[in-house]
Length: 121
Image 1: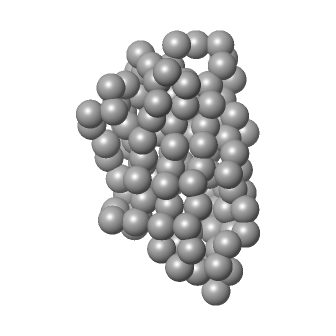
Image 2 (image 1 turned 90 degrees about the vertical axis):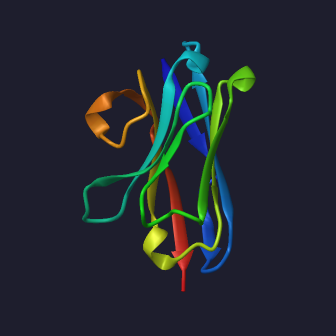
C-alpha cells in the first residue's frame, strides 16, 4: 500500500493550491481518507477527513471555509483544495487512509511521504 502526495509549492498569502494524493495497492474507495499537516517544530495536526463515499467531511477549525477535501474513487485519489492561504498554513501535508473518517492520527493505517506547502507573507 502506497500513498503519494503532490501539489505542494511556494505560494503567496491569499493564494490557492490543490494537493493531490493517489493510492496504490488497495481499493481506496472502501476507506476513509484524511489530510494532516506538520509545521516546523510542531506536532502533526489534523486538517480534513472524508468518508469512503465522500458524503461526510470534517475540517479543523483553522481551515474551515478555506479548505475543501474531495475524492475520486475511480482514480483512487483524494484532494485538498486550499484557498486564501495564510503563512500559518506552512507545513508538510500528509494524506492518510483508515477504516473511518477521524480527526485522530492513530485511526489511520497508511501514510504518504508528505508534500511541502510554503506560504509567504
